[in-house]
Amino acid sequence: MITSIQELNKKEKGFFALVLIFFITLYFARLSGVNSVVTGLLVVYSFSLSTLQEKWDTLKQRPHIQGMLVFFLALVISTLLSEDVARGMHHLKIRLPLLLFPASIGLLQLQKSLKEKILLSFAVITTLVAVLCLVTSIYAATTFNRTDYMYNDALTGVTRQQSIYVALAVNLSIFIFTKNILFGKTKRKGMMLLAVVFLIAFSYLLASRIMLALLLVTTLCFSFYYIIRHRKIVEGAALVLGLFLGIMAINKLMPSTFNRYKELTYRSFDFESRGKESHYNMEVTPDQWNGANFRLAAWTCGLEVFQSSPLKGVDLGDKEAALLEKYKEKNFYVAIETDKNVHSNYLDVLFSLGIVGFLLFLMGWLILPLASAYKHQNGLAIIVILTFAAAWITEVYFGKNFGTMLVGFFIPFLLTEGHKTKAARQ
Image (cartoon, rainbow, N blue to C red; front, side, top):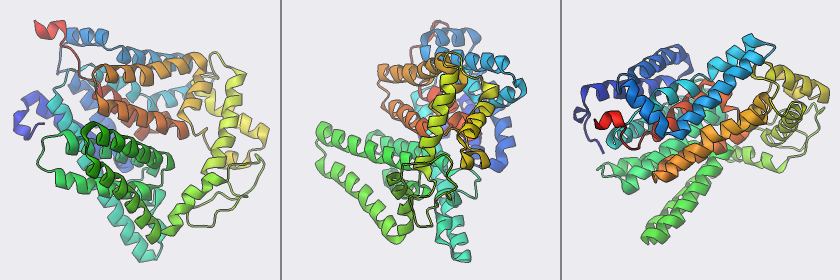
């Protein structure tokens, strides 16, 4: 792994600096304008790192990038076919990173050492942001005597980003640190281990059920693999034990946080219910709307919208109107009054673009990237892609700037390894 920035050449230093600024500004919603400018500079600068001929040769070698570009073309066509083209353009603008990053960073041939340094820098920045969130939340909690200020969306208040998206970034950072601890040559493994322990506790406080569940499953699977493959029984067992002890300690100190997980036991719903939305700082009862039963109700509506136009979908610009009409048909008052989306990236793509667009999405952003990662034995990329795949189940990641930025950057970036192009060999 690169140990010093001095080992980078001039162009690589410029690329590295822009990526760092991109990461920092991405976390803070107040800096969204700055982040957009930095994203534009990063995309333009990426074109200076290789020739157009090299990019063309690389594009032919990377079917996943082709799939990503075809999917974005489907988004453009769907926008133009919409009755509300203006609204379609709004949604298309949010999804621009799904074009810009694959067409720029996705066509680079990056050194492994540079990639590892960028990934490690992301993990460090994420940890520092998490520390900032925790410190400001502790201050708010002690000032107002409200322990709930240290949990869920309140925990990330200083960034003005939803906790669900920050939780995904935290998971990615844990995976990056773990890879460096177990397989890297760095001398700072002790500090990385402390960062992992802190981020696991922070992930619990963020209260993203699917991200925490994925973290637990990944840790268990990797621990068993590590024990069997390397016969490191003590290390593997310690990793699992430490994870569970940490979660138990937090739950003991802040028992109300477990309410978020109790909601999963109440899955029945009545569309016309006027019940309150549950909150982790209140008692959980069957008559409430919670994260589980609301999603089941919203997914039912999304599937019915899809069935009304299964081939081409209702189109990108008209998807909100079509979903709202379905909510009204069901007298789904809580969804209407709070302007809820369908809470699933898969369903959002399915009913807006139809089965054709949905298959293009799966090929471009899931199947082909996984195939490429497997081909190059890129274990980290496989875990990251599967993490995104899990996150897409319960949230519309393509509907938020933070979501499309994370997806658009990381999947193409992690898959930048490959054979040298003809132009580069000459």
